[in-house]
Length: 311
Image 1 (cartoon, helix red, strand yellow):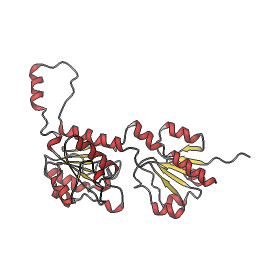
Image 2 (cartoon, helix red, strand yellow; image 1 turned 180 degrees about the vertical axis):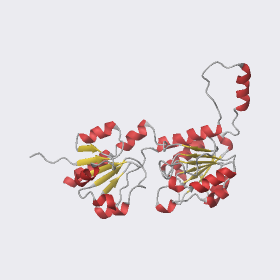
Image 3 (cartoon, helix red, strand yellow; image 1 turned 120 degrees about the vertical axis):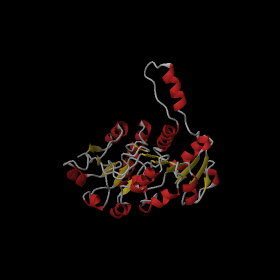
Image 4 (tube, one colour; image 1 turned 30 degrees about the horizontal axis):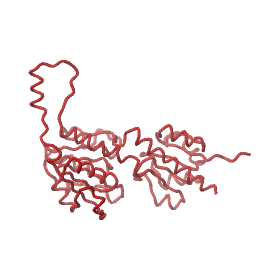
């Protein structure tokens, strides 16, 4: 009898090429957790490949007695109970640097939208309107006149610093770790209070540890400039959305550019809806074809763990 091929269940979207590569080595089934087939597949599965919205906790692990490895096609492990995985003997693998460039590009794309008003012309225009546009669509400040504040100086935060420094922005950051000077890319470390008070642009890039929930709260917003451009592409639960909404209602010249939310998707009760100076996007920062492919290649590590388990 031929050896049984390991069963890998994919619960969310994966790039086709890595999925095909894995299917050459394993039995691969795509099945969402709310599918009626999932319980039966999980009971037989040797591995799972998940993305953002599959919760890997003790309850799920108890239903998958054969699981050896769970791959997160992405960076953060906020949807994992790592202690439960360790207790169950389930290895967790992810792709820590897969989307860094994509997220950094998105931060600066949003920043350009915030600072450089523009419209795109799709037809003929008379001289009066042409000249009016040139008078009205004027950026208040260039980036090199602004202080870039980076909250969290990991892979993405440090890459943001590299770009900001290249744009000749004064760049400051706050992180709980001591960052060697040669890894700061021209940015200067400051205390949290100075970061909040001085930043003209404040972009958040902290990790998903539980103690970071509500890290940017009403007290933090009370310290910020009334003209701050606040950007969050990290995790929705880092920011107190109610406090952010209150701050934005009280400071019409400030702006918030928010890509991540709690919950996702949000409903009509979300406190950031309906505010003219708050711009929301649908968790798109890592949304490039290259980043999605890079994240999907977590399947290599999943296969490596399955191969090792057979030896």
